[in-house]
Image (cartoon, rainbow, N blue to C red; front, side, top):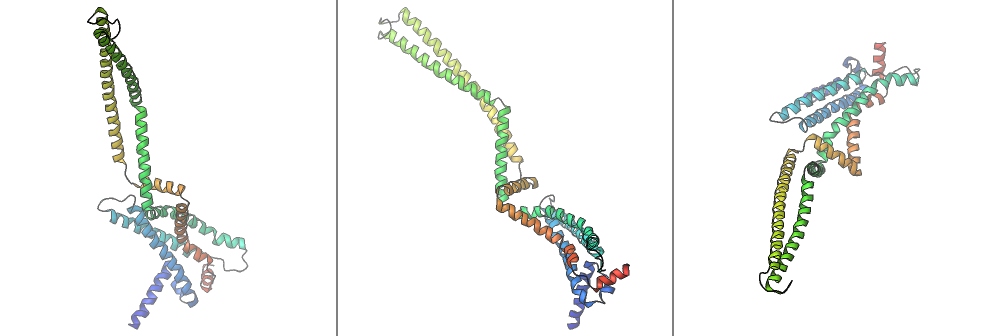
Amino acid sequence: MNNAKNDAAPARRNFLWWCAGVVPEVLSKYPTEKAKYEGIGGAVLTTGVLAFFSGFYAIFSTLASGSYAVLISIAFGLLWGIAIFNLDRYIVASLRKPTNPEVRWRQRIRETWFPALPRIALAVLIGITLSKPLELRLFQNAIAGQAAINQEKSVQEKRAGLIESSSLATLDAELKTIGAEVASGENRAQTLEDEFHKEADGTGGSRRYGYSEVARVKQEAAVQARQQVTALQERLRQVQEERDQVDAQITQQVSTFRSGLNNDFLTNMKALSDLTASSTAVWWISTFVVLLIVGVEITPVIVKLLSPIGPYDLKLDAMNS
């Protein structure tokens, strides 16, 4: 069992050294450098693993669908993780720091930090890209509520647009006008009918009891007024039916529009943007997530740049020279 443990440790260390892109034959001569490059290799491996999970979740939560969603997401996560891992391994392995103490600081910066700038810029881009799916997961409940509010607002705007482009406003105005005419005509017809009855029973008008010529004239006026009211009521009914049909069509179109809304990636991103703009707490957490991903992405390069120059670096510099 002791031999197994002794064999397992070098295998693990060799793998981390390989992740750091070292030359094992050279590194084996300098025991004090082994722990440093184990740490650098672990940082490279960590970014590759994180890239796999981030790529997997990004595709799984946005583009992948159907029965093969998990397999497609795993495949993309592996490709993305391998790409980031190899990129970090290449940059860490190829990053050389001047070992000559007489090298001026400007040349030292030019030969060490400048080659790392593209990787740092790429890390910022990757961090922003991969942080969004994580933010969608982190603020899932809040995003669902904001998305519902946004969808309801879209439905209301859709209905307002349909109403504005339809004849509903014109029909409502016509209904109001006809309604006023019906009320006025009803009052006039009722007044004329009352005058006819009073003329016929002798309690009003000429005070002559019976169906006189004056009563006949008032009766005809009352009948004519009642017919006008009936015609207006029929027109009112027709306009109301037309208005109901237009309103039913608008309701159907709004219902179709509502059923077409879903919680896709764009909808959730819009909701996240609204939450970030309206809530300082959400903005800070979102910024922290982005900075965290960016920090993890640039860890291998930063570790290599900040690590002190050791005998392994001096040996490689001598070999390259």
